[in-house]
Image 1 (spheres, rainbow, N blue to C red):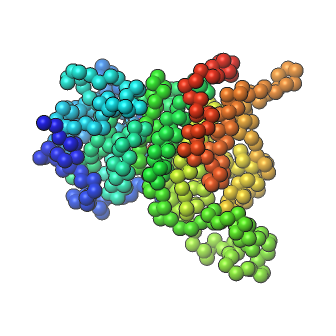
Image 2: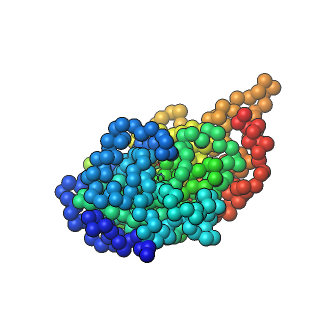
Length: 466
Ligand SMILES: Nc1ncnc2c1ncn2[C@@H]1O[C@H](COP(=O)(O)OP(=O)(O)OP(=O)(O)O)[C@@H](O)[C@H]1O
């Protein structure tokens, strides 16, 4: 008889009760929350360590580390055979492992068993042989993560388990203060290996998959908060990818405080006109306004800024207190910009102020100042090289790919039509106003996406990047 994964556990293991109290046995005094909030920032320092095969040699240190992990987590070696370390991030280490007790459980998560699943066409055919190894990814969450953070990730993953475009949670286990999440192993390629070669025709299915995942996540009112290439596991050979890492995700509306951006444009304009800054003097402050230089007296604004540097939307940088799922669309736009510009990482700021300056360089002082006012804050810079109106995204892409110079007859290179379409879509994702930014549902109806799989633009692609 097979059993549902979440109802059974080896006697020696503490099965992680996803919806129950998780604090038992976890030393709360030790658990320092590494979650990025108002003060912390996360860098994209996760590494993918290749898609190991079993023949591949394993680094001695990794072998030692895996041995220690197996021996310290009671009962783990009866259930899983660790094969290799496949990823190391800010909050966890991920291992590839063989599921030794696969046949003892109901495996509803297994895409190879699903009929009518879009995953089915992207994965190997179900095998009749019961002996074929089944692989999982074991995410060993660092013990320094707070129990609430771990609970949040597992809870959201559980909510999203029915979605083919999100890597589902099989189960989670706890031994003392160590929590591990078991996910299906998804064969993918490291972004750094393919981003330079991707043609526009290759980008379409990539974003079709990514936006399908985002549409599913956003439909449930969940903000992923950490959309970046290492969190979208993509297999270019199969044109298929899944979203992982809900460690920073949250339900929209958590810690919500009203923000200026929700006002109607006329109400916002009225507020601006009444502000001391707009009037340029502080002798007669209108009611309910702040003087310009009051840093010592006014508490600083707090908002969730969790995410990875370079991928944060402007409203996150401006500490908007009413952030929505559209922050994920911005981050997806940054991935597209990376692909079109052939530069990774595209943005490389050390902190949020630098990140705002990088954006100002592209979008210009005027639009960045307008975006700031939208969220009830002021953005000023005296850096002389920044222009008032910034540059078009088309120009940025042409510069980045070394196509901005005129030819010997003085003509500028033109962007091929399919690339123009991609840049137009990019502009819809990198819209400074979150309310005007395209949604995931709308993105799936955009021609850049709907043309995925059509052999439309191969000639242009070849001409462009050869
Ligand atoms: N289901 C999976 N199948 C294959 N590889 C995976 C899977 N889940 C995670 N990985 C690998 O492990 C890496 C780290 O995983 P994850 O992003 O969940 O951890 P993290 O510690 O939160 O990382 P980060 O610092 O990027 O937020 C991924 O980039 C990927 O290479």
